[in-house]
Length: 117
Image (tube, helix red, strand yellow):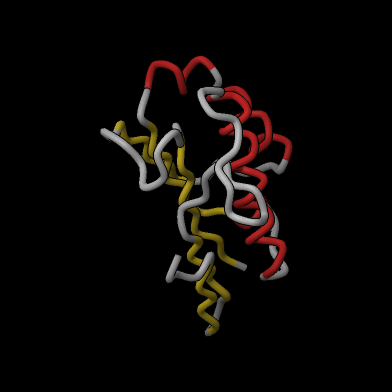
């Protein structure tokens, strides 16, 4: 769609700026319409895939922005995200924003991450 899934900046440290990740299949098709839990899990898996490509993992996250079309519904399923981050031993600075809609119709949540090594 005209953008990279991540931009790696190398210097004293390596910093990866990940594009927002949603519940999309590897071939770019939206997944799990109307299912916040499944969309949140797949969005995080997609963040992890971008991190892996850069030789990083969830443990490298320093920032995580969460955009959702339904904050209350997201809070009902936030344990999915919290447990995965906890298992990785990381608690990145996080911002959660309620938005009117995301770029792809039907998407309920989008995760934007920054990681440092």
